[in-house]
Amino acid sequence: MRYWLLKSEPATFSIDDLKGRSDRTEHWDGVRNYQARNMLRDGLKKGDLAFFYHSNCDQPGIAGVVEVVREGYPDFTAFDPDYDHFDPKSTPDTPRWYMVDVRFKRTLKRVITLAELKQHPLLHEMPLLARGNRLSVMPVTKVQWNYILSLV
DNA sequence: GCCAACGTTGGC
DNA sequence: GCCAACGTTGGC
Image: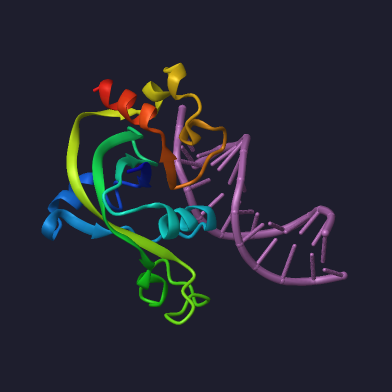
């Protein structure tokens, strides 16, 4: 089992939104970056856990935990011009973008902010903290995972 | 709202 | 294949 971090802007889709979905499950659509796409398509496996990270908001940081319940499959929101992330270069026959389904596990008792994460030398190697990082899907090591959860 | 950092596009 | 221009991300 592996660990991941998934970024989302809470104004668009928050951990509470996920919790409110039917079966507390939703597809993780809209990723339009090849490196992140590759991880969604090939890396995330059923049963893997991921931090739900709130980005581009008042308090950027880790807000909760989700579980991968369906492995990578074509992101159908790329096929439909009505969706924000429509991509005419992606078709059902030759899909370019992928997504997974995630299920809400829990909300952390408090948001572990980016500022706090930066203060821990043990976490300095996280890609999340790398200069200029913009990946919306990234791996988390078991050590980092357990350490972060111990901060709550 | 600003802006640094990065990815993508497209002319050449 | 280079690289300038542009668009996006996302912290601050």
